[in-house]
Length: 109
Length: 117
Image (cartoon, rainbow over all chains, first blue to last red; front, side, top):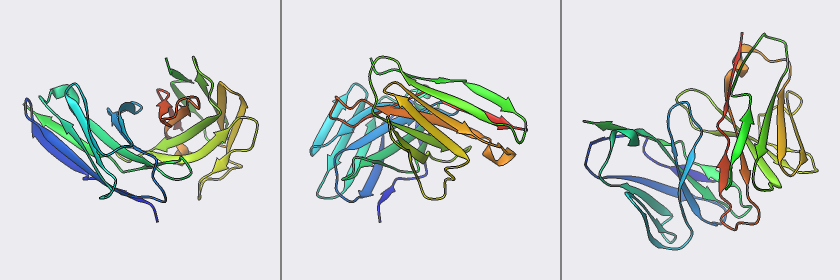
């Protein structure tokens, strides 16, 4: 079956760095997305990885290892507004998004 | 670019009535649109994939006669919740895929919060 695993909840301190991990098992693979979702709002796009390696975009970076079925989202210089759920989603061979349950990130002052 | 709108943003209806939610891609054409439902503190649940000019593909457990989907044009898909009941109260989110872009990214609408009384 197809499966995405990510931690349910994480807590970090304002100004610090946090890494949110995601492992996936899909029928075929055509890339992986990270989305941010604030409570009561729709998800917003953060990153897309299809090749191995690190993609950096400002305070946020995303890493992919296809051989390990593993990705992480790295958030630096955490701000209170980064408190949100972070969704990992992999694209399978049918180009459908397989969603993880999301990681709720709590930022403390 | 890649803006998706939804209407209405929120709706309250009485049990037994039907509600239509519209999803529009404003600045691109979307052959494929997706409808999701999200209950409080839970992840997105894909309900159906809507393809322009053809019948929608429903996920297992989603009643196609209750959740009617119409994708009549490349910029509009509608979801009609028929004979709504309180358990249908949820956050409904649509997304659209920009087919010309090869990233297969889904662009999300702002969501519609449905409350059935």
